[in-house]
Amino acid sequence: WNDIGFNNPDIISPNINQLAQTGLILNHSYVQPMCSPSRSAFMTGWYPFRLGTQHNVIFSQQNVCLPLDKTLLPQVLKQNGYKTHAIGKRLRLCYNAPAAPGVINQSRYQAGT
Image (tube, rainbow, N blue to C red; front, side):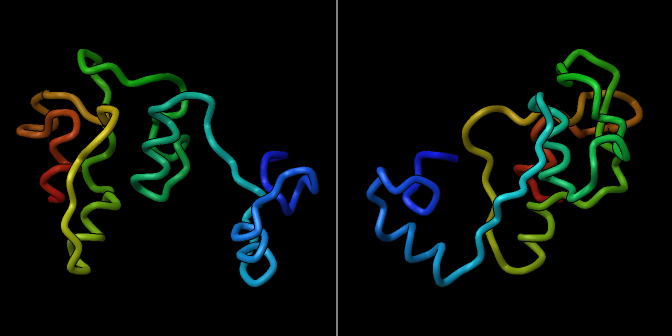
């Protein structure tokens, strides 16, 4: 917060300062303290407590899954002509279970379906 010029005059960041002056500063961000709740909110646009993902990290062996009726960000992007691809840290928002046949961890993200 204090490492950009428009919040700290000791920091030289003219490009970011110009963006702040001519654009919109989003300075009220709310995130969860753990990765699974944050990712589920980001990927669906729903609060984690509405998804049942607010309590802890979802591990692959847990009997926990995002509700399958929720549309994920990559699905919306694909519907609008974008190509999706999973990179970086694994996304564990689902597990392989009878309730979610064929949906294993990040496969909904990669497939965008």
